[in-house]
View 1 (cartoon, rainbow, N blue to C red):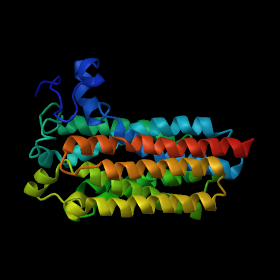
View 2 (cartoon, rainbow, N blue to C red; view 1 turned 180 degrees about the vertical axis):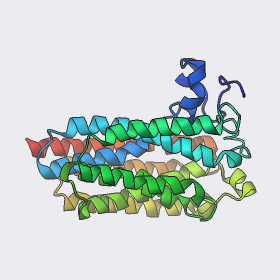
View 3 (cartoon, rainbow, N blue to C red; view 1 turned 45 degrees about the vertical axis):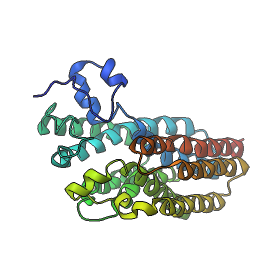
Length: 310
């Protein structure tokens, strides 16, 4: 067993490396608590849909509790998803410079230990899910099918980002399931918009590994688009803004939500202008900035929900 204090190459200088107990560090790294950006990105569609649905219901009384539960659930279930991803990808990760120091390929934890940790995280997620209505519980459980198959997609298709989008955008359905105990057209359009956003930002993320991915045969939209990535981002980010706008119109959103969407769109345009696909460090910074883009949209939707409930 390798030293549990050994750091992961693509995540150093974080609180896990400096403050967490040594025995806990490999598990916190498995669940990516050393780099929570993915949890924030999973959370954004949850918060969007909760705010939009609350505004449509003209009732924000349940919104604070729902926001808190979605926050806990997103961080826990993203951790579970990353643990599952690392279990299935441990042999591939061992062949990529950026990922070979992760807990499983480096031997900091065993597969059995990782599986036990996965179950523990899933149980916490279940406790959160059980706070909602039956329809929302079943909707949340249904997402596990997509989460389970995602790690294998990069082996068989150039479009694994679509499957990631299906999983990471599921929260766009959950808010409506929680507030209305149903999924309507507005929720589905918001879901489609979120998927387009995910395809865009994960393409940026995947450009960090294009050389290693080519060597080991891993497929991605980053490799597929190559030098045409900026044009592809214009298409997918533009589609995201358009579809989210259709969802806002369908949900009779007021001006704060539209202001949030305008700020979201401006941020995405800045990303495209700023991005240099041959600079991995810049790709990571631009990718991480999507949390701020998502929060800008959420702020508008939240203000809209509060205004309509008044």
